[in-house]
Length: 198
Image (cartoon, rainbow, N blue to C red; front, side):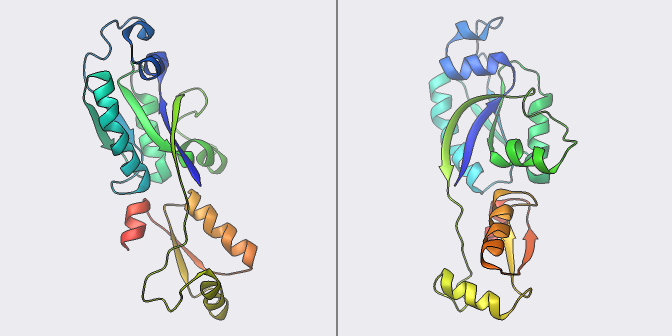
């Protein structure tokens, strides 16, 4: 499982989203006076995008303003996270992200264009999505045991897709191989949907 959370910058974003009231926003008594931008740091069609879009509609109803979803995928969530980190901290830019951009990326990339501790403020946990092993129907396997046996027969010749280098699916694939002594080729994609489609 990996967790999906809202993150937002600035105290206004926190107060607005937690209380949904103008008093908590400080200098902006009319918050929200305009649409709120929800940045999703992944391409359209993946798990984070789908869940973010599902959440955006009731959020818009609760705050009485439109929530405009903007996909800013690329670089394992770094591009979208940077957009949010650099936005004006006025409560009008929020981020719907997964563990990758805020937990994994700092472990892999020592020079990120954002600071996950100081540039963001968590608002709420929204949901959890499981990681799953999927195979194309043409692959002659019906379960994980048969998949493992097939991979063992062809070490280094089979591949697995991930949502990107350093993503949960990449780490899950590496862990799967390590636990079972398997060798497969990692094929990173720019998000969950491109990986699934291919």
